[in-house]
Image 1 (cartoon, rainbow, N blue to C red):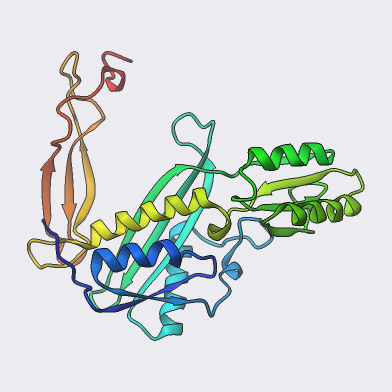
Image 2 (image 1 turned 30 degrees about the vertical axis):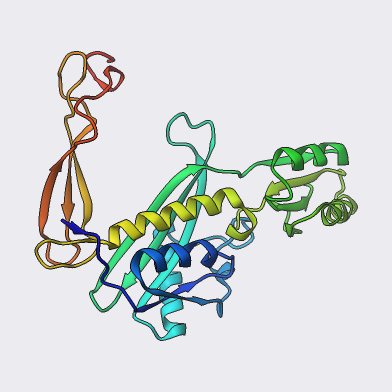
Length: 284
């Protein structure tokens, strides 16, 4: 594996977004790769699905990102394209906390490769069904409003009547009054806006996905020089620090080329042993 250089110095790639993602994506990639990121906003990406559930997202998260990138490439007439897509759900550890996974796909039609930057972490995706303004105000403060914008609906989470992107207190009060007037129960459903420009917590995870993509694109195949030479498989068996038995923790990673199929196995250097808590013998 070779790293440190860039195959994209001086070239232009297009990023399709209407939610401000260029603010974190362009500076990181341009600095790391020496490329130019062209921001394309000539397509309403909400047509491909919304976090507010009024337009369902077809396909998988990766397919949605790929579709966005392809649309941007067509609009810009470029062979290099970028697009970001996020998802939200419970954390993968205890299933108790809101979690955000971000993909940033890069498509290079000249080399016929796709490379995906990935990041995940805690999410701010809170929601609350408020019975009065005091409850709505308390939720907003706890949810980090106005830095994190809000979405309001009358009645409940599936009500098609909606106000998005609420960004200050006067606007929130006006939206709450509107929703109350529309609600037969006087209850109002509030949720954190999950669009990138409205959610700084999500934007931080997008930045981490950009950094992951940049590292992958700066890693080149030692056989053919194609960028994106990265881990394609992990080999379990890191020994337990207590009994020495092999665990399911990875002891090595296999780096692979997206173009020529070259493979290199790298043993872990950051850790020699796994915690007994990860051992099937010590912790059955």
